[in-house]
Length: 318
Image (tube, rainbow, N blue to C red; front, side, top):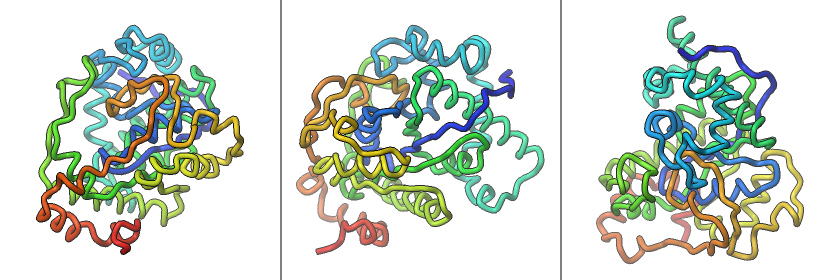
């Protein structure tokens, strides 16, 4: 069983949101180089990737052998052996689900479910607090991307939530999901990410981005970053992030950027895209292969489904 005793004090969380294959892992890695920021990858998947499957951390070590995550477990729970990952994942399935977003917005759920929400968010906040304490960072960067997670965090005591919504032309997202993407060894249950059908990806691109636009309209501090701009002008994106979290922009803060080349010292991202394993110099290259690879009919269907937000984000201008 996971207890509810917690470390005190508010934790600033920069929640990286958006549709998978939109450049969020690159953004996550980049933000992790900013002073006072510490990236953990997709924390939603920590329980299955870490205690349950012992997959590789971005540092290259298996979760159980990673000094950082071992210390986080000790600070948060007295050790990972003191928690049952399957129990928490059952709770996660019941609480952190897109189907419940409407109820969370209206605050309409039973006292029993409210108790589950309180238990779930208490554990998540303890994890954030432990990450901040062990890393010494002021801001924990979580790239879970899920609207349901953000909806819960918005009303979690002790969490100061800021959102970075990373968007990409949906034709590029659809094209990316039409490929089988290989994964580094021992970083997932499979050696590759599966393809997904056009109708599913186009629909999710609209709904996921729209949900975060609603959160922003309701007052959640949010910055929107287009993948295409991130790759071309990464310094501007980082300035926007620093402004969002109230940190000054200095030459030192952006010293890891040299034009469209970034240098990373690595991370302890527990789950996410394969680029999280990269260290050293990384040249930022715009991927617009959809312009030649995506059949015309697929482009047309994607635009038909996604045009309202495509226009808002500048993908249909001109």
